Length: 272
Picture 1 (tube, rainbow, N blue to C red):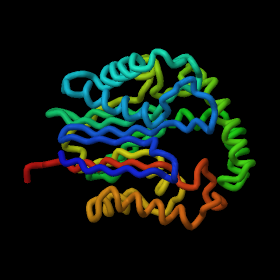
Picture 2 (picture 1 turned 135 degrees about the vertical axis):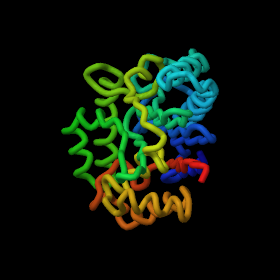
Picture 3 (picture 1 turned 30 degrees about the vertical axis):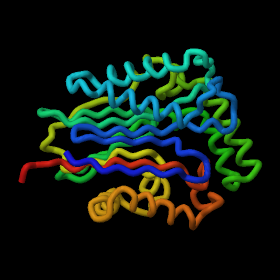
Picture 4 (picture 1 turned 90 degrees about the horizontal axis):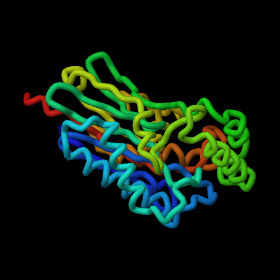
């Protein structure tokens, strides 16, 4: 398959999204915000997603390895890179993960947290995502959405939300993300489809998918049409234009005026 990629920071801070593509797979990581809270790590989220991404790609060099095993291997290798950091800190750098891999007889997918994979087939679009985070801390999320994005009240409420989420992150009572232990990989949502059922696919961070899911300013059909016509960077530019119309989150309450964004657009080579 042909994979085209793009990523862009949502503001002036370093980009905490990461994307890669090869002729057989695509990977998107979305680093979780620290909200200014202590992480126990001297490296930071951009370092973490870059290291994790590179090790996921290395683990996928074996086309037969199951996706959870590849992710678990990568998580273990990255943890070994910074053992002097406090990896038991509940705020240790972490990320969502979305992987799509084409094999001769199937297309595999893995999603861990809310970076979705969208498949386009003859019958329309199928979204593969893991929204378990939406089931926790709903009162604190609602509180943060009452304040203008970027205001002192908003920053404080987001910090309270992130602090509460950290306490149940990677626990059976909460939700799962890629962090410091391999176990999380085996809580990812996985599956496979017949290659004949997929014409193209988009692997994206939620900084992109919100154009459809939260802003409702485009359909997946619109998104895929733009991806074919102009490519992933143009799609991110469209997201930025929409966000610029609501800089304080009054129409679309959100954690940041502009979130980091990443896209891998996969078009299958049918040989026709």
